[in-house]
Length: 286
Image 1 (cartoon, helix red, strand yellow):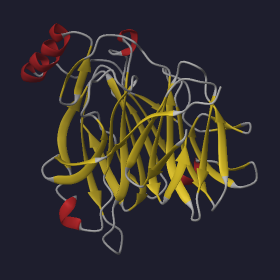
Image 2 (cartoon, one colour; image 1 turned 120 degrees about the horizontal axis):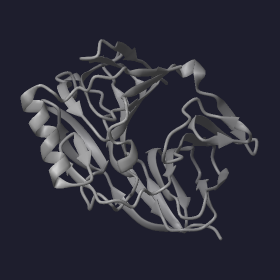
Image 3 (cartoon, one colour; image 1 turned 90 degrees about the vertical axis):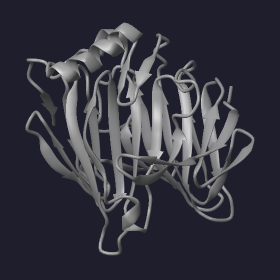
């Protein structure tokens, strides 16, 4: 059975960090709505004043943050000694686990453009206090597949036509694809029944699950076995995001997501006491 779109919502303008203007596609409704995904921010802008203030030092616990850059760059540093720059086509998949404190500072390209997205994925209770780990994925390591001979798919996580993305061994079995369709083309994708499936349009407009979806809009699919997305008279580009729901209680405040209010309070107490960062090694994945 083919999935139909249950709901289409426009992303909403908001301000994060110390004045970064962005559009939020996920993060305003009940936190369980798109389980296991909690937040999706679209920080595309051609105006440096919208983003240069960045996201100075802040903590995370209990989640994974996935940063995907199309133009410009994001410099990353953390209190565990890691640092790097995420450039065009690069991905950083950070599992905060028991806790990290880091900063992310965007820079525009030669034309002042900064295009990127950040997705937050929840962790189940059994993994919330796992050692933090990073996957820094260069653009050259993200495979591109011509699905059905027409759709161009950048495979960040998941497998398309036997080609696996570089991000693996994630608890929620995510799929994260950047799909570009030429005019009049259709992309059909099987998704395990019961998994949450979302698409976020980032260029042009297309049709999916009986609905039209446009740049800056989020489509949330109902259940089924697969999805079909078609472009109209022009090209259409979208992010396809899917994962296995966790179905656990969510206690969320700012950058920390736990299962109970007691656990949440303990995290903030540890921040105040200086015991937030745990004494185990950071795992850096290839």
